[in-house]
Length: 368
Image (tube, rainbow, N blue to C red):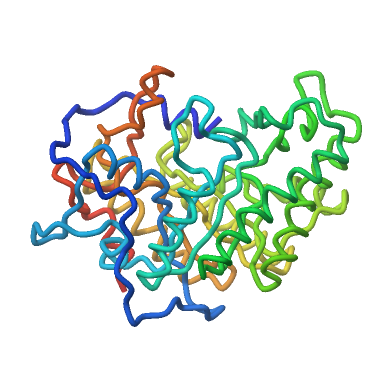
């Protein structure tokens, strides 16, 4: 399970960010630039969902000249043209007041004001959802399938309507995060160690489609993504089963962490991912977005920069690839959210910022 693997990697170093930050509700100043909504533009994005918690923690961000800068504007400066934001159903239950509707809308407004497109990533859980953990939201536990589909639709529409009210129209919406084994277990689960679950694919497709239809009811032009982990694997079998169950999507989303596979070199992982992006795009007649990527910046920055640059260079040559989002690049390998302490998790070790709050050379490949 990739996400837990990433979160449990050893911490490379520990530093404390000083400086206080009381302006948690700050909004990035508007620019005259408008988001690039052309279908042919290669997306260079970042998921910076932790940014508001980091700011509340006193973390500051700086450009290459050492000048303090708003994180959204800094992402634009290093070459990003889009921001991805995750949404949890009820994160207040033990995980703080982040990644809920209020927090997501505030961040989406800041992204819009910085002239960047927005991707919304619905986890349909109260915490991280990934291949090894798709926990049913506590408020939805015990509901029959029809009510769960309604809950998915209502939650999706509530967040998107709040964005619309705030003047933000997301360009892409993920209905689920890395849903290899379905979502909202066990109601939307596909298999267990004993084998496939009866009606598992139909149940999952019904829940996913409830999200798809809800997105289209609020933003008909939004591109709906179904997202899977491990871009290096051949996932044609998965999408064939999903389509056979009536599953709907406009775009395929993949996660790609080229240095996270212990039994494969990063060169091999990159090559496999590029091959499968092309084949999936051709097979299903749609674009493929790399919704998450990350490299081992703090192990060897030079190597990490080469790993990502090689992938980005080749991905941009593929007509089938819509773009690439870096996952939480603004972290430094030491900072971690407060609830990680409770869970005894180490800090995420694939951020792309230095200990002094500046972008590293890993992000150079996002510049034109």
